[in-house]
Image (tube, rainbow, N blue to C red; front, side):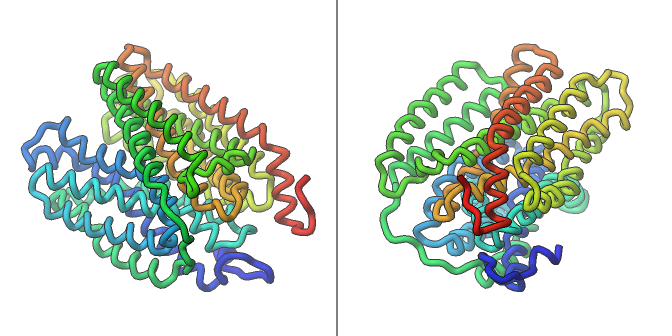
Length: 469
């Protein structure tokens, strides 16, 4: 860990000692946004009972947060270029903390949903620019290690959320889940204002029409995926998807003409970036699909209790926590594409082994297969994220950060929706796991296609006098 805060002559980024407080601010902000989702999921039955609403309506306490967060990722990343990333991060944290207080004091579903939407907007502001802040805090030679630390934080948040939520609910009511964010948020606010890199915002306008198009495009897409995942009539999902496609086409046309586009077209002219985005989206389809499919596999097919199912999931995020930082550190020395490809192979093998899991398998037989998936994903994510951030021109790193966050969210949502679609068609749950294998195979193809380009880029970082041909 001390290596992350070492300083060498010629390093870009912040000086070593200044990185500690800056990265702590990012860790706390990310933890709050990630833990919130899985922690609140545990409380949905309690919220439904306390507010006297149906379970179906209570689900929107989680859905609205995720939809708003996803829809505003690109907008927030672009807006940060005008006011500076530091100011946007602090504003996002403040909004998240304020909305958490409002959610804790809410005594009706309408007020709770309003504050959950504001929480989602605050989370979008912090998550959309997190990777680009890592790039501005750490020198390029340590970026893989830094993004490995980020992967550890995200995986730890997902793993700790259900346990933390269950612990709080065992001694207090659900409003305390939101109140928990207040002390952490205030500490993170102070750290972010003091330690994050100071920079000037760019001059020029903001693409308001592009921002509106982005929100409608992504919001409609996530509503379509949510409708599909919850078994609603197919025409509803197709209607939302049609809106997303049409607005998306108009949005892309707008980006080619806008003076300050949300999604700069030149970003996708970089082959390494384009292939890393493709690999990331497909891999997150596999992970999002598996997380839902395994719940049904363990409980309905194999007869495990919800408590046993929760334990069977644990090896996945724990493996990412253990492997992710190591993979990030190695990605600064070894071809990142090679490492990411190896991780995808292991993830694919893990999903295939779960699809072949016999119904009478014991806990140990299930645990090692889930752990194999986590090891594979932990090997894949930090090197691939490093490729996305280092392949983008530095002046477009904020846009690349927004794309990274959006790709992750879109991939996970599509995976969840595919499970719902296959189950609505009465397909065996194992079929969905094989679809996850196919997604990983396609991601592997994208990862292997950039192998030589990634190797040349790594050589240039190690020997700055060399030039990539």
